[in-house]
Image (cartoon, rainbow, N blue to C red; front, side):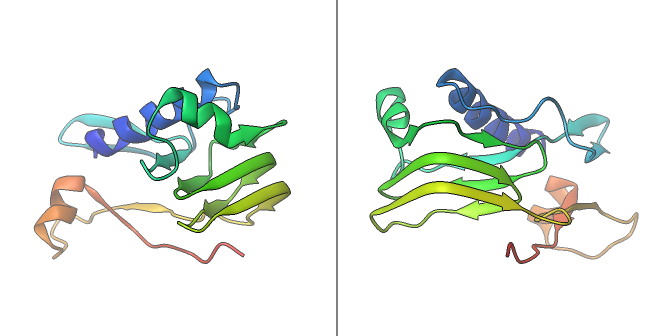
Length: 139
């Protein structure tokens, strides 16, 4: 759980470093696992196919972009993003594309994290994580 949180935090810091707002704090999703506090904000993954360097990341975005603390974003492929307002879920693909003037607003969390029950039977990798996810469609 904490390693996953660190990946999200690192990605958010990269985006904030190029001027993209990634929420104003942690989301309401707070957990404890093995006495480790897990406080997730925006869940952001930057794949190497999207940007393998700081310079390349800067070239992928233009205009005013923001990602709310409750959002889930996976950036991959040869995509340029201009004026994105994300408060929900977004996954770019490997195809060459341009996203321009897009606003996404989800009514409920796109990827809620659900703490495991005391004796819940799940795969080992889920036990280590300390919670499970139940993806919802991002309309």
